[in-house]
Length: 306
Image: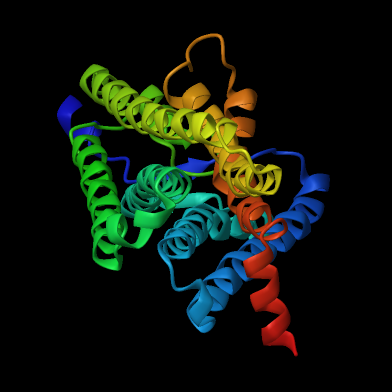
């Protein structure tokens, strides 16, 4: 009878960002505006890169895929959150919950490795400019991108596969605005120690290895820039790399806090705010971070609007 009861819960309740009724409509309008801006910014950047032949180089191939990953990350989380604000539909089936986390995990993991490819691309472009097209042919770029999505596919599959070993019998309330695995572990009736251990190991492996790869690339870039005698060339290199480093700092800073440093000292509200930052705010900011100081992108936009 106990085993029967342990398998009865097949739906969850998402508590969302806040329960205060007077904030539901303002928050809906705010996040709807953010979502529309995010999609226009990221999909517009992809269209611009596709449309302008001058942007058909490795740097912008990676940037277009970063924009696609950001659009997927935001789309995996925001629509369900907007539905809850609008009609108070806070129920989500187990299948929908697991699918939501899977697509988030796939796109976020792919983004980690695309950022590594972008750092390596900048290293080659600045440290070996004469050999750039030889070292970074389109075929290699496509391989980098394909491997990034393949790792994301397998990483999401691993976590969702492990979720099916858990049972939920006492509480089905997820104190979050989307199906994040850490809150799911806290309401599980099955011991989630294996899931927690795998999540921690994968977070360490993926986040630390990709972050260190980016750091190594940019240390070598920095040394090359400092050896550059031309002040104009130095400023151009710094301008090119600063946008990437800003995006990397925002993305990895919040991921480290959530998946590596999170624990009893991080309350639920703080966890929601950190998650809100990397699931919704970073995908909103990235297209503007990479576009506003990029003369090639601004030039392509001007040509398109003429």
